[in-house]
View 1 (cartoon, rainbow, N blue to C red):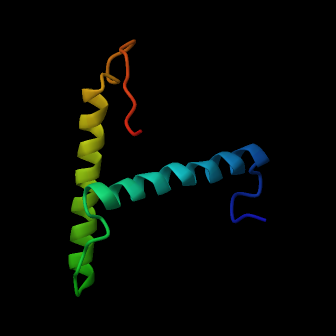
View 2: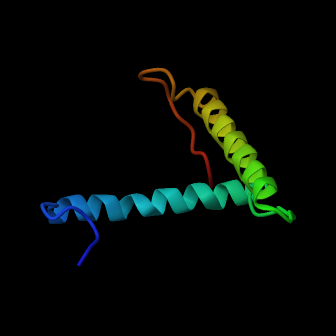
Length: 83
């Protein structure tokens, strides 16, 4: 059973479940690259600011990496991101 729309097909449910892994990888990268997990705050608003800035930094790094590898241009050669 799933808490989704009643008319959702099995393919839709599998596709949505599969996107979880990409999201988990993004969070794992953000923990290592921009210190997503290194907050020491006492209040919710401080935590929110830290998480927001860390995710913004991760998004900027991702865009910069995308363009640096030439993936922003059609037909350009690409290099592996991780080994």
